[in-house]
Length: 128
Image (cartoon, rainbow, N blue to C red; front, top):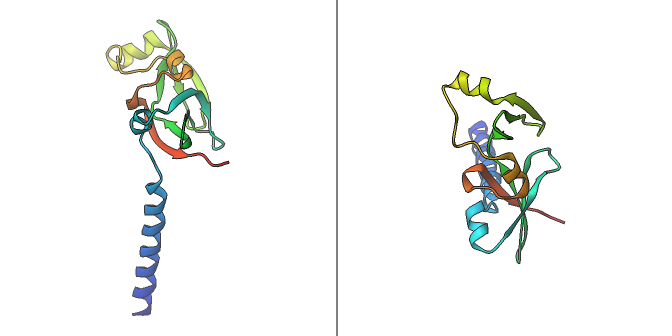
């Protein structure tokens, strides 16, 4: 009986921590609707790539949600979880996957902060 209470209380505590962590997250589209502006692409302290959005209520960091981007007609870039970029031959890649992928974002647009909501993950408030 004591074991069951321990597991139940541990499970409940874990749920509360997870619920509290997600309560402060905002969506990229929601922040844009509130008038937030998007800065150039940058890296968080963790190494994650994304964008800082600034508004009257403070700043948020929104994680990037894409694995590849277009550099030019001959080159693609693939992103590692660490944020490192690896260049790929676009023609060879497109032949291997059956053709061009029109959903890939343009790297220059991403770097400049011109990003579509589908390429942005969760947004969390920045402190300090």
